[in-house]
Length: 142
Image 1 (spheres, one colour):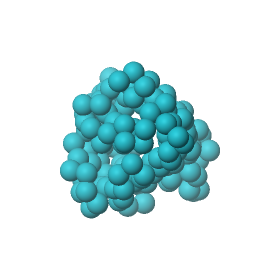
Image 2: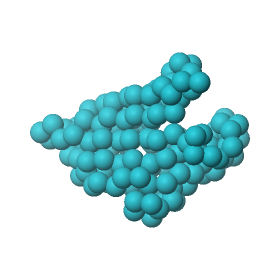
Image 3: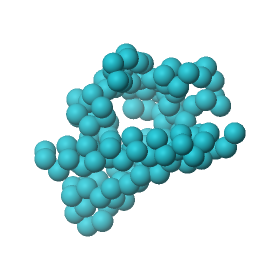
Image 4: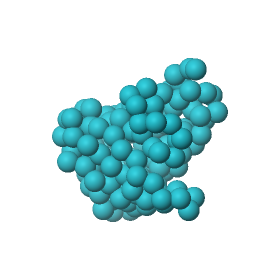
């Protein structure tokens, strides 16, 4: 079993403050994160829960906020029952979202560890790239 990291990035024509707001506002998250309803208290050690339907199957994913550095970095763990694995620490991914201001634009870099195969990593990267495209579209159209 490997531990491969999925990576994706984009540049958004908006300030880091605007991008950060989109990352932590449930009403906005729902618009770019596959329709997921997010409940979080946005503090280190706090829980984060995503609810929705994925390919016709309801889900409730969960995790914990690991780092909350406004306009710079959001890091959280993530586990989904759709993975078919038990909710144990070794089955949780860590997702890190870094923001870097580039003048009036913001580079958003995302990584997700804990992928066990190259196929799993590729699948994760595809999903994260789609999510970042929607984040970009959502923020730039606001």
